[in-house]
Image (cartoon, rainbow, N blue to C red; front, side, top):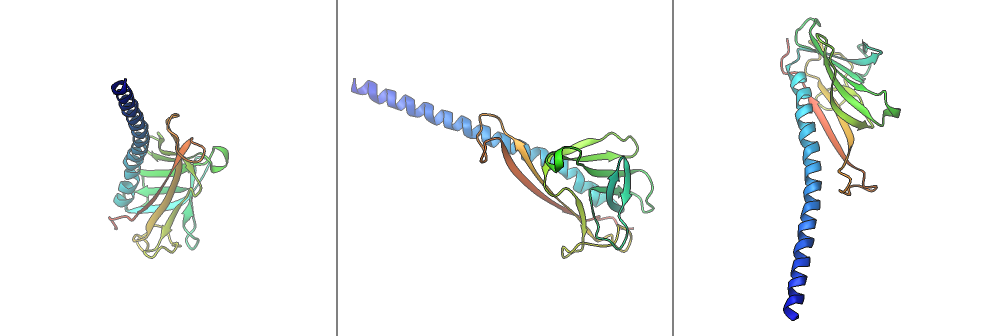
Amino acid sequence: MFTSAILAMFIIALLSAHLLGLRLNQLVESKAGANDDSRRSLGQLTTDIRSSKRWLIGNLSGTNFVKLANGSIQQGTALQLFQTTNYSTPYILYYFDLSETNNKNGKLIRTVNTNWIPATLASNLIETLFFTAENYDGTPATTQGDSAAFKNVIHTTLQFCQFQYPTTQVGSNCLYDYYRQDIKATPHLPE
């Protein structure tokens, strides 16, 4: 009887450890998956910025890109990247889609003007959804991406929440986990 009780306690302890391991595995898989997806997709953004020769920051008005005027702080919801030095096609357009409920579910979209097929790079974005041009010391720049400003840094902060697997309890209301990525890149190919 004594041996049976010890065996039962051992089996209960072993099952408890196994169930705890399964819960931790779910948590790690959800975090690793979110991290891997964002790293892969946002790596494209930094690669495009670094390979561009000219850039413009602005906003989308419907489907039209409206660049910011020189002399104003270069902060907007869209980024236009040119692979040539004369602002010609083809170009790559990154923009934040803010069409959903008060910036609570924004998306970062990438498209190329040769085919206009939008690809969502990040979703469930919250808070600050804009691109900013900065000087080397972090102060906002006031000139566009011409030859005088090619050394400016393009900065964006992506804050997003991701829904977790329902049995994984993460966060205060157990529905999502919060991530933040600061992306700063500068074109490496001036004219």
